[in-house]
Every structure is written in structure tokens, then in C-alpha cells.
Amino acid sequence: MRAAVVGTGFIGAVHVEALRRIGVEVTGVVGSTPERARARPGLPEPYQSFEALLDDEGVDVVHLATPNHLHYPQACAVLAAGKHVVCEKPLALTSAESGELVALGEAAGRVHCTNYNLRFYPLCHEARERVRRGELGRIWNAHGSYLQDWLHEPSDWSWRIDPELGGPLRAVADIGSHWLDLTAWISGRRVSEVCADLATVHETRDPNRPVMTEDVANVLLRYEDGMRGQVTISQVSAGRKNDLSFELDGSESALAWSSERHEQLWLGRRDEPNQLLRRDPALLSQSLRGDAPGGHAEGFADTFKELYRAVYRAVQSGAMPAEPDFPTFEDGHEQILVGEAIAESARTGSWEEVRR
Image (cartoon, rainbow, N blue to C red; front, side, top):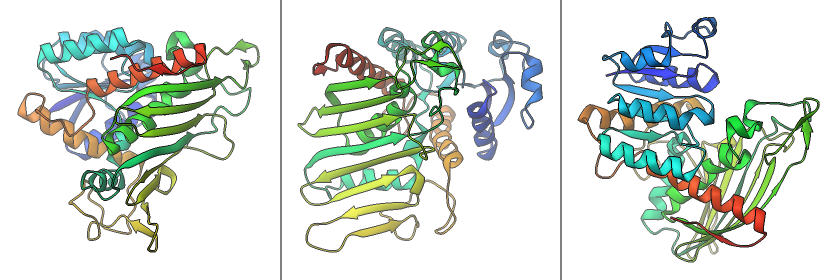
């Protein structure tokens, strides 16, 4: 199996390294220019263009780690070229685009993945398994946050702030979608309605560029089975570098996890001592993904490696499995739908249904 990666920034390089670690040959990369791609150490020789990559019949899978506005047209082109595709989130800028990608992926019979890699921390798999076994009982509340501080100062700037490149939602689409996907996957429940408040802290940045996208979001959630939820999403929380945290409260017990303490799963009880479960294959309820024994921390980059193990098992079989064990274009489309409901709720100031 051979792959190529489009995008040579931080995440593109993470894709390349993860693929190499699981034994997938990376034939090349595509950057904004070949010269810029060559300037990043450790990457393979770049293709002259995206089109040249598509023409390479030896490439089985294309990974898209490009700015958001390119995901839809590039994914369409990859599928039209008959190749499997892994796309960074958000899958597209609108649900019309993401819905079309779902249909195109199914029609092409190719493996398709939306890169929600945070599912692949081992203790997130453990949390899901405990929910599926019924250990929490009836889950009635999901709450948490995803907090960062990389846009804390008005001098901070990124292409993600520009809605032409990043889309109409920023914090929600960039990091909030991770929280929403992860908690939906672990709990096994979809969001049905939202009530959202979005705020732009810095109306101008760097130094006089107007800001049209949100720095902070607070969202109330209703799920299809009556479960309730709440999430705070912020890219301006000083001291929080990359902290996704969630807690699920149920009739029998609760559990909680944080990406900045990802080797620990908190287990809460009413009538007996709480527990702090550390990641150790000898202690967990299943044979979890990951090579490291207990006490040897698995980090952010490992989640990509474990996600791609699952994706490339499907690629090796030649088609999407009946029950994929990785996030698909359907999962990417789901979060676009939830995001659009959040944007509409913030505009109207009322509860809005997720329209599927």
C-alpha cells in the first residue's frame, strides 16, 4: 500500500510520520509549491502539483491536510481518480458539500475517512467499551470543554480566522467538532437540538484585520434519547494549550477524561470510592490499540498511527467495511450538520434542530 499527503504544514508532517510508522510507503507530498515542501525537513520528495499526484497510478490513498476550503474540491478529485481518501476535518464548508462527498464515496466504492484522530487515545476506547457494557447505566448528562490559548492575543493570526479559507465557523469547526464527535462516539448518541452562544473576543487582529468568526462558544445540547449536554469551546483560554475534557454522568456511575492527562480515566461512584484508571493493557477491559506497555505514555501522534492502522486494514481489503472502526465521511458530514445548527442557533437565539 502506498500513500501521498497533500499539505506540508504541522498536521501534514504528522500524517507522513504516522504512515511511515505503520509501514505504509509515502510516495511524495504536495505543498503550496514544491520549493516550500522541500524546505520542510523529513518529508519525501514533493510532486510538482496536486494533479501530478492524482496521475500517479501507484498511489492507493491520498491524505488531505490542507486548508478547509480545499477539502471538498480535493476530495472530489481524489475519488474521481479512483483512490481512497483520508481528509482532515472539517470535511467541507457546508452540509451540501459534505453530503455530496458521502454520496461520492459510496458510489466510488473507495475507503473514506474523516480524520477525527482523538477517538484513538486508548482510554477513549476504554470509555466507549464501558458505556457499551452498560457500566454507566442510563446516561443523562455529557459535559465538558475544549480549550486552547493560541489565539489569546489580538496580535495572533491564522488562515483559520478568515472565513473564506476556514469557513463560517472557526472554534466550533476546528476543535469543537472533535469534542462533539468524540462524545457522540463514546456515548453512542447523536445530538438532536442545540442552543448556542458564540462570541468574538477580538473584533480586529494583526493589527486591523476584521474578525468574523468566533473565539468562544457555549452550547447546550439535547440528544436523541433525551440525554442532555453542555460544552464550552475556546481558543482564548490562557494556559490551556490543547485541553479536551469530557464527563459522562449515568444512573450507575460516571467517567471523565482529559487530553492533557490522557493516560488517566476517572471513574466516579456514589457509594464506593472513586477510581483513577491508568492506561495499562493489563488493567483494561479489552485489548486496546497501541503498542506501548503501561508507564510508557502514548501521545498525540500515536492517535494518528492507530487511526491509520484501522483505515489501512480497510484499504487492504479493497472496500469500506460494513461496520467501520474508524470515522468516515458520514461522521464528517454529521459534524457539519451539527455545526450548522449551532450557527443558526447563535443567529436566532433559540433552540435549533439538527437537520438530517
